[in-house]
Length: 99
Length: 497
Image 1 (cartoon, chains in turn purple, red):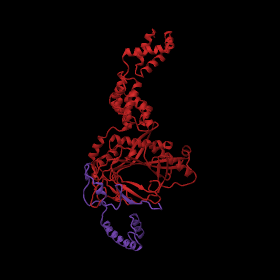
Image 2 (cartoon, helix red, strand yellow):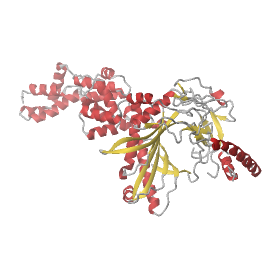
Image 3 (tube, one colour):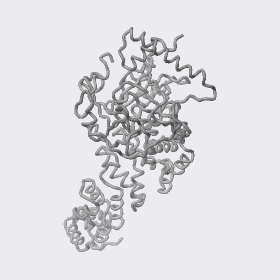
Image 4 (cartoon, chains in turn blue, green):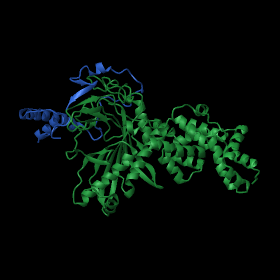
């Protein structure tokens, strides 16, 4: 029984807007399966008294004071944008024709 | 076909749910130091962090955390001892990261309640959770006929708003409101707005989007205890719209259900102009946000001593304050409710604080000023006149320098931008005529011009004096002291009462 199915990989690809070919789906499904199985080994050694951890560092409550810092200029902010209009980032149509 | 409200309520029972978003009024954004001013030129309040440029990392704004905890406490919530931010992944250009930092199964505050009053009845609204997230950027859709996302050719995005701290307050389902459902929804959002104001955590301006409301409605047949399928109506941008949106959804759903149809679980959009909702994107395909704990931010574990301190320092909450003011001002429930509905309580309170008697302050705000605000279609608080100025006008009336009619003219002048009450009195020459000589001249003229009325009074018909006093008031353009004029006329005609 594999850890991730080909269908699940196709679903994730769609959510991530990645256009994968059938060959690529097969390829990545195999690879992801191997990765998930390796990671799952951690679960085998984790005892009941070890809570799942989400952060590697034993830190909490790291805050910054509510102070204003210099922002970028619009020119700087937009300098890497593929398309700009009216000082805004221009993005392709969001909903397709079918929506 | 929609069903008329009364009939819908005979057949069905509504269940409400409200999700309210409050933009916090912090100086800087949630995870970076960019400013949060409303209406700034596009993309002038952005930096590598809120634009999600590679290598940037978020750090949480302590004031935003504090404000969220204070909101939770004011809503009688428990405060989490330990919680995390989570990534909500979705593909949409209003967030440059392709995810929004939010909270998922570990909200900062949970299990609270707020009591609202509708028609003298107290309804307890249970709060499911209060969590902290970041606001999104603002998209403008270009092309297409409607300016909406459907049919647009492309969109342009301003990220000034992206990353502003946003608190989401979610109620538990609210059954049992029956035909009061629209009013309860409105009263709840009104109460939240006042609580936010009293805490000073947000300017809660619905028209600027710093308070936004999504309204969930479902219906179940009378006698059933199984809740129906709900819809979520967005774009509800005024208190009045909250009420109308609930009502319109009840009528629409009742129509569909009574014809044997099924309600589709979906997002709907409210339209101010028609007061109705239309279908948005269907939620049939359940959203898959793939939430997971945000690895770039460490957990939050508020120190219980800090939480206790914040709780002890909470301001007097609006419902408590209303009760106190009502008893201080000696008003009936009805009068107080009317002031509450008119959003006049804070204004009257400030006017009293500026030295006016409560009855006078209330008279002006609920009378003349409410009428003018209504005529201009603006909120009472947005009239270009201050509580201090109203207090000054009441002082001038009390001292005898103005009568009510002149006071109204002074208010008109202040509203027209002619300056302070004293300046308006000066410029328009609105003092009461205190010069007895001037008054006697006017009286002589009026008596000469109204010989009939004068004769009647002389012969004992004292009631006829009203017309003569009216003549003097007219001649003085309202500036005479009517009581004094009356006494002088009677004296001149040799009549005593």
